[in-house]
View 1 (cartoon, rainbow, N blue to C red):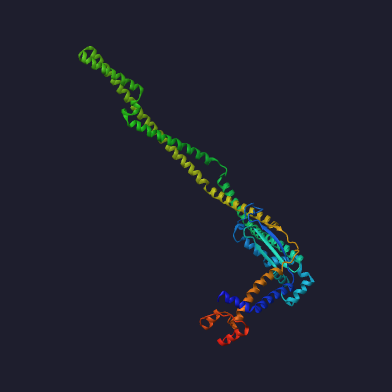
View 2: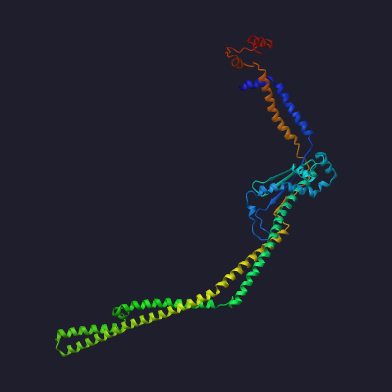
Length: 459
């Protein structure tokens, strides 16, 4: 269908479209005027998800969960919250409320639950997407009643969060109170065993003898390490004999070596000058021999001294090894004597630690059970609205215009579908399958009808 054909259909059946459009507008206007006026009162709450526990001072991890805000919304619109509103406002005691319940349920069921379900129908809770604010609104036929219900649901939500914390803390407090009795009896039992063992063995818990013996053992160990190092060094020097660096680098030996070299040079010079039988040569030879003998004796004496130092150092090391062994035996004996008392002391410490932790948790839960604070802040309290929120006549009329237009066009097209007419040459070509040779305007309406009868269709 072309646009021209569509417009021809609308022009031809405009009366049907106008009738349908007007009917929709009229019905919408009448209904909007007849419907009772509804008033909506709004309130806003802020949830501190970074709140710290007022007792422990630590940050509450549950507030950081992604589902936390969704849970808070469900709590506001819960049956428990609605029952708190019913009890706070004492709706079940009002005669008109009782009459309304009797008329609606014939006196069957629980009046509190019935009113709670009825109140939830007018409640709407929406969390903000990018903040921790929860918007709460209540719609009712009376503006004052709408504001009262909105504020009542706000207070009921705050009371519910406090009740949940208090109930959990009370249960934990009862549990820790029972555990304290068992832990205290266990602590007294372990302390008694420790005291009896100390009296039996004569061991004082504050005895510092083991520390003193350990200090002595460490000192002997340090001396032994030093002696081993000295022994190794002395043995290394002694193994060198007369070629040891300490012997060769001795100042007296170096002096004798220098003197010997000078005498040997003089001897060589006299041998070349006077010959081996000259008295001066023989005197110089005797001096060289004496110096060489003195040098050999001195080197032998120093190398022997190095061996003696190595032997003394090895003897000292052996003595320290014996002392080390004896000291270890004394330390092991003391440790063996204190083994059982250490086990008993650990048992006492563990029992004391468990008792202290349970006592701390007991005190903490006792404070939490008396806590009357919440992490909820009221940003906006509900007030009676000055204007009604529904019905919105202008909005309803705009929607009626949109819907009426669609229904009007649909009605025209439906009427055309059941009663098809020829309105242009395109209709002739499409319906009869023949080509139009010419398009001549008819001067009168009766001629158009006559032309239609000749073709066998309605015009």
